[in-house]
Length: 230
Ligand SMILES: Nc1ncnc2c1ncn2[C@@H]1O[C@H](COP(=O)(O)OP(=O)(O)OP(=O)(O)O)[C@@H](O)[C@H]1O
Image (cartoon, rainbow, N blue to C red; front, side, top):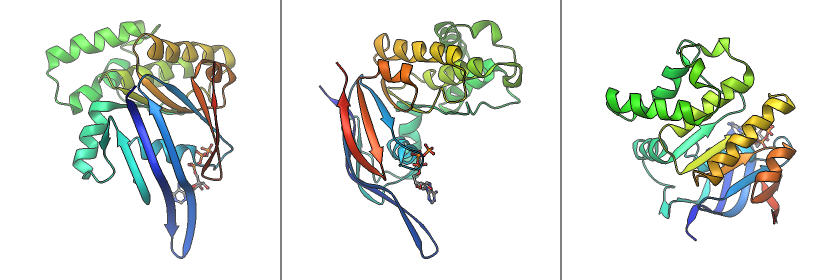
């Protein structure tokens, strides 16, 4: 099976003045296409740094990032941004929706950035609003009028609208109560099983962990162990 993501000897050192902080050290990881990987580790262990490096939002200090079989470590900022728009969807803990845009406009935005025509955008946004349960009827509302679970479903719709091959998610259920969180877990299950999208997610949510394929335990910037789920 083809690898969706490969990290080869990846290290990340943050420098501020004369201080250095090693956030990742010699990380090696292969993620297969269609796989759901959960990153688990204590606060400050390097999960977000790893997601940012896989998502081309941050560069490694050493090592290589291979996405879709292509070494993307040294692409220019413009090339990285094109790659991100085409290939990757992001879901954050705090939803990161734009407050002055409606649900519809939030979901539409990545398509505007990708230069898709208005007619085509209408078709795709309609499709995605129907694909994610319970948000079509909210399409004219603003994010502040929605519950946390509804906002997260809109954020997931926004991540799906460009038909990414990879979804990166950082603690997507951390701000939600158990029942609302379960709807998000079901949605990620659907994204994996029905859409075949590769998922890499930092999470401590037990319901989410039940649905992933492998759990990668991270401590002090290193992969401590990888657990296969049966
Ligand atoms: N821009 C930065 N500059 C300096 N240090 C940073 C920066 N970003 C992260 N770090 C440090 O790198 C380490 C790893 O941070 P990271 O956010 O990846 O951890 P995490 O596992 O995602 O933690 P949490 O679960 O709390 O979000 C932390 O010690 C953090 O303080």
